[in-house]
Length: 210
Image (cartoon, rainbow, N blue to C red; front, side, top):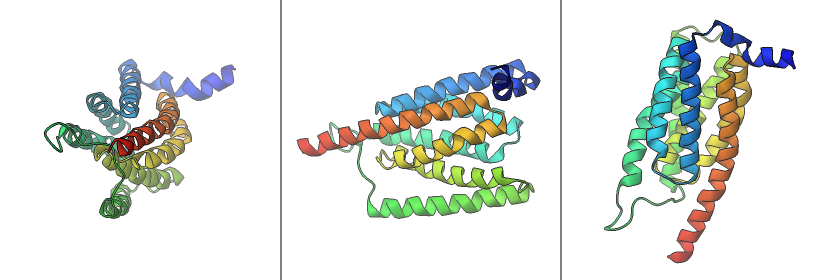
């Protein structure tokens, strides 16, 4: 048991107490954000802004540039999503949950491709193609970028990208020595599955009442 505990948490012995507290705080608000997203609640964005701003600071400090870019992008898209979710499409209704249109799917593919190129260039510039983690980081960053954009647009397809990227991130962050963050992504995976089911039910009910 002690060997498992050491594997999961030994790296924290070299971390500043403040950084550990900040990571746990960011994880807490990250969970809150995904929970509110599952509930289709606007609080997904303010809680997300708190979590991502903390992670941007920590990941920059720890030189995890791909992860930092993801969270910086989340921060910007949270502001955009906050606006979209509160924008009224008519006198009474705000932007509803819907499926991505053909043009939005094309944009999603473009975002995915451009993100791969962008992250590649960043890692190339900093000469960080030193192990397999950089390649996985590039993939997860692209998946998360598309997922966040679709969520901001209130498209149900966002959950597909979250689930895949979250599953990949569980062992990835464990390998990086960020156990609390790895646990966060495990929780995210479960919430994302239930989030998809909740949004699917909401969408079905909306179609039936039209």
